[in-house]
Image 1 (cartoon, helix red, strand yellow):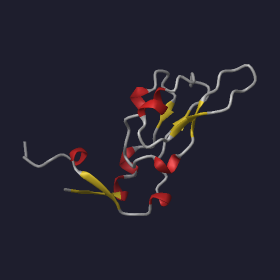
Image 2 (cartoon, rainbow, N blue to C red; image 1 turned 120 degrees about the vertical axis):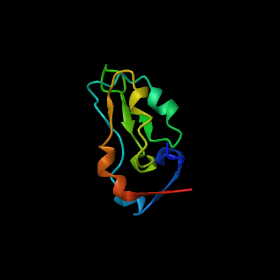
Image 3 (spheres, rainbow, N blue to C red; image 1 turned 90 degrees about the horizontal axis):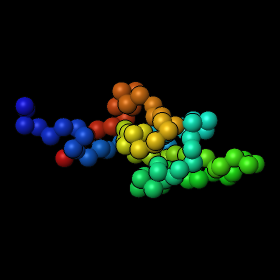
Length: 100
């Protein structure tokens, strides 16, 4: 053990404007059951309930994608239907610097 805090314990500083970093979830609407667990869990407010489609129950949407915290993956395991996917974190490490 090195004694250094892991990157996940350090604060992140973005190295590019947030609007230039395409890190946000995608919802598979065919798998989404509209339960709202993601909306209740996500403090930055990325998710919202969409409009119902005819007789079908409304599905969740990514209403505020730029509110998503770069490299956060906490919402994926919260989704009971597995409808949430995020980009590969290793493709976005170059946008983040870890600071104390």
